[in-house]
Length: 482
Image (cartoon, rainbow, N blue to C red; front, side):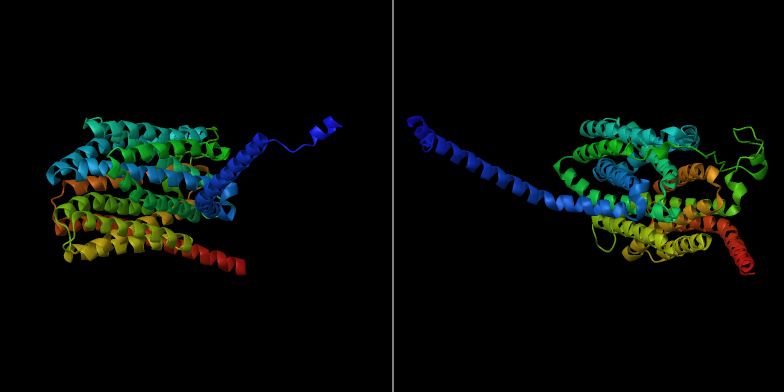
């Protein structure tokens, strides 16, 4: 009985206190977890919203959504490095010295890249099964080089320039590979123009978000944006391997010959030894080559404006504004124009791409001429916006022409090689902008001459191609009707 009673006795004081302490700590832990969930909820909601947008309309199933996310990481990392380099070779020194440094930077980067650019496309043609690894390698190389540049920024050593060269080459190589990958990840009933516009828009949004973040990190120290770039590129390295395995598939592909004439193309046969001519880009119609030349003209203009206006507005700020404000207005206008061009390109869905290219290049030419005659802050901002708009819309129209005219066998290679040529045009335009005197009317007159030469050389061929395509469509429609 005593034992029975003792087993039902009330718990001791120490036991009650222990339970009380345990309950208290449990309530405290629950409160901490609740606060953590509340703080994490907005971030989770943003991530889920972004994932829902990027994975919409079959992009998640095809793998295009993951490429959009990877390109966003790429754009954010590149702008972090740009912020760091701008503060090092541009804003931190007098204008004449800054001009010399940037000229040296371009000389170091442009000459090797001009030699490397024709090699990148063929090299990727020979490595069709390693595109994910190649993209990861481009990301990892920039991550490591960002650390090298951070040390060079701190010490002021000349390691900055070869490291910047490596970053540029790796960035361009990534761009070439990305262009080659997109056709492999198209969702059902997705045009190439729409897919490229989504990828580009994702990169633009990430760049817009990362630019102020990089500027904020720079206030902590000049190396901090580079640390941010390192983290982003490491994440990009991991994301590269999350792309679907079909990215590495080269089934049904061959090599495009961008400079092949019809006779030259017939001299090259397919690897299978069938004696069939390998399709070259010029053998599928002149529209693509004319469109590529027009796009190169626009890329040359945008490369020119980046470097010429950067120094011009630093020395001669407009409308009583500071140099930073003038440059900021031009940069925001260019970004807004690029985003608008991307959105309009997706909306137009490749309607008469030849006419679109002719129109946007003519618009850029007219705006450049007007800006040269009536130089002002408003006109500079307008030219920056029109140039960004023209670049985005002309590139999407070129994508549409390649999708329409280039055979499936060489389409992926054609994208890679055309992107390489466009990157070279941008670098060459920047070089022209560096060497010109800082005179707004003179500089924009030269820019107008560049655009005029490209437009006049391509307008006739593009419009003739548009007429032939329209006539062929009418004939096909009449045949179907009968």
